Structure formats: structure tokens, C-alpha cells
Length: 340
Image (cartoon, rainbow, N blue to C red; front, side, top):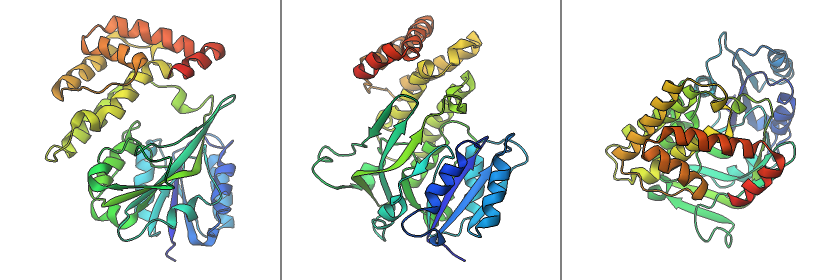
């Protein structure tokens, strides 16, 4: 049977959140019978596999994929796309959930002239909730929808795939891949897909996706290797767009900002190899010089990037450690969020 939508969820040690994720799909307003749900277990060591097996035995439209080794979410999503039968493709992280009318809301907008539809999302952690409105155009508050043409799509500021609907035929025809990168694979996929897209509709007033920040999530713990992954994504995007007339600084600013923020959002600097870290910082400094990077992020991040550009790496480390301490103090965190 061919379904209208295939929803793909890569899973790893998701036993505490996976049921909530699955049920947010099974309760969709368009009817679960119209959805194919592919659950990719990336060699979990908890009860994730048993949960997937239980649901796949109950529902014919839940397709399990089990990996024998941990390969990262990008490999999982690429494997799931190969098995997908839906006309449209959506993604969900196993920690998160869809609003009940998420699929219906995006499906209502996609057509022959619209190749991608997106909506806003909400982030929730233990003591903080924030709705993120994707401001693609200045008039986004006065209109229920924003239409972005191909030229505007190239600079799409959101690198997320979980709040979007894609066309499977565009993915397959153009061999769009996530690849095996463990960080930044979503942006690499998205930037490739946008090259072959005519128009995007963004639902300015609709919040369809909920991100739950897990305190012990794998994303809380990163290493210098993840910084090199960010750089690999930048280099790959630069290569893909090499023969396209684009502002490379604008195109790569999101990934460069993530590199900078990772130094104080995650615990990278708790235990690191100095030479390896300095090599990563030097690579970023050289990349910015190559593309004549000229974008501004705001005072806090611009200070860090100033040190990176001038290769004052010991100051980058010191400054990032101060910011990390602030972020991990609830009182100071409130002040930090007001500043950013």
C-alpha cells in the first residue's frame, strides 16, 4: 500500500519518550491509516527495540528497521527513505511530538508549485518553554503564510527538517542524502533539497512541532569531533553551491553560529584535547577568511568570533567557559536568555 505521508523517526535509547512520539503520530487528524511510520532503531541498548516491535506487531503501517551497529541518525534517515512509500516525507525525533493537526496542516499547503512546507515549533525543558517563530519575512506577523521563492529558499535560516514536509520524488530524483555525519546532517540534507525546490510555504501562526530537551540527551554531550562535523557540513555546502551565485557568508552563517555556540552550550570544554580543539578553531578561522565572512550574530557570539578570527584561541576557551558556567546556573541563565 502507498501512503500519503511517510513519517521517519530515528531512535536511540528512547524507551522513556518513544511511546509519546508514536502516539502523537497515530492520533493525527488525517487518520493514521494514511500515514506510514518508519522507526529506525540505531542499535539501542535499552528497551527501544521491544517498544518498536510491540507497535509494529499492532499496526501494519509501522515499519521497523533495526541496525546492528550505531551509525548515527543520518544513516538511519537515509535507510528509511529508501523503504518509504509515502508521496510526502516528514521527520520526527523520538524525544519529540507532533501537534494533532500537524500532518493535515502541512498537507493542505503542498502542491505542484509548492515543494516544501514548514511551521513553527516549541522547545520545552524542565523549567523553560519557548515558542520559536521562524521569521522568514518581515511581514510574517501580519500574514498567516509566507511564500518564499527559489532564490529566497537558498538562504532559509532554519536548518531543521522536523518541522517540514518534503516531496519524496524530489529526494529520490536528485539523490538528496543526509550522509553519515553525526552533526549537521539535517542542514546538509535541507540545503541539497532546496536547490531543487521551486517554492516554500511557511505557516506563520501555526506551532506544529514540540521539542523536548532531555537533560541526559546525547545532544547534551558533545566533543571536539562534533565541531569538525560542523566544519565538514560547511565545506560540503560550500562545494554543493560552488557554481551557484550565492552570498556564501549568509549561506553558512547558521552553521558557523552553531559551532561557536556549541563551545558554551555543551560540555565540550570539560574534557578536551587542546591541540585538537585549536585545530578545529583554526579550521573555522581559515574558512571564514576564505569566504570573507561578514555576518553579525549579536554581541555575545560576536565577541567569541572576534577571538576566533584573530586566532586568539586561549581567549575563546576562557570566554566560552564563562558562558557555559552562566548557562548552567538557573539564575544566571535567565539573565543570559534576556540578553540573547
